[in-house]
Length: 383
Image 1: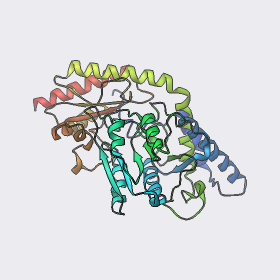
Image 2: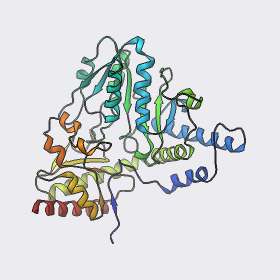
Image 3: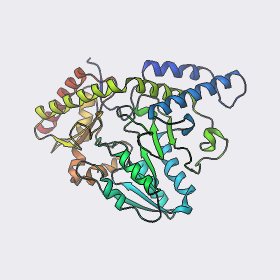
Image 4: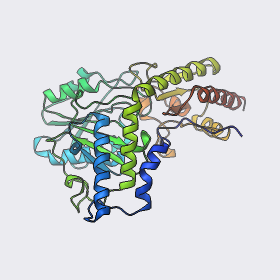
C-alpha cells in the first residue's frame, strides 16, 4: 500500500524525532517547576529553556515576555480579554480585520457583550488589509487592534510592521495572531512593534496542548485564570511541561531551518498549483498568487461544481490528507467568512480545498497528491 501523504499540517504538524526526544524525559518522570527538590529544579531549567527558545523564534527582547498557555485559542483570549479588561479606563473600541480566525472574532463578540464595541475592517479581493483603510476606522477610545500575521484559510500575509507602527503612533495596542505564520514565515517582534502575539505549538511541529502569548514589556493584562503565580501571575495552574518543552524544541528547529524551509515550501507550493491547474479544468485559486503576499505553506483552491468535503473524503480513501476549508468549525458552518469577505459567493466555500504543507513535504509527495486529487475530482464529476 502506498504511503499516506499528509498535506494538512495546519491541523497539526507531525512531531520530529528531536521534539519527541526532548519531551520524553518529562513524560516518563513527574516534574513540577514549583517543586524545590531536584526534580523541580530540572523542570524549571527545562521551562526556562523552552521560554528562551520561543522568544528566539520571534525575536523577543526577553524570555520573560513569553507566557505559556494551553493553546493558541487560549493565547488569543488572554490577549483580547486580558488587554481590554485591564485597559477599559482608556476606551472600549476594538479594530479587527474582517478575515480573522474565529478564535479572535468570537472573543471580540464576547467583549461586545461586556459593553465594548468592535469594528470589522474590510479586505480586498486577495484578503489584504490597507493600512490607510484600517487606521481610518480608528476613533477616540480605540484601545486595541487585531490583525493576523497570515490568514489561516487563504495564506494572505498582512503588512504587520506597517499596521503595528501606525497603531503605535496613535497609542493603540496591536495584537497579531501568528498561529498560521510561525514555522513558515519569519517573525520578528523587534522589527514589527506588536504589543501582543499568539502562537500555537502544533502548527509548527510542536505537540497539541501548548501555546504561547508574547506580551511586550509594559503591556497590562488581566489574567483569565486565578490561583497560583505561574507565568508571572498571568496564567495560573501547573505548567504542562512535556508539551511546553516540545514547543520550545520545535521553535528551536524552526529557527535553525527556516530559510531553507521557506525555499522548499515555495517550490512545493508552486509545483502544487501549476500541476493542479494543468490537470483540473476550471480550478480557481482563493487568495493571492504564490509570492511575497502568500504563506508558502498554504494553498486554497476551488473546483467549481464539486463539494470540497466529498473530495477530501475520497482523497483520504486514496491515501491523501487534506482539509475542506477552515478548521475549528461545525458542519453547520460550511460557509467561509473569509471567502465571503473576499466577495466570493457561498458556492466557493462549498467547493474549496485547503492544502497546508510542512517541513517534510517533498516534490514527490506533491506530484502523487496532484494525481490523487485530479482522479478524485474526475470521479466525482462523473457521478
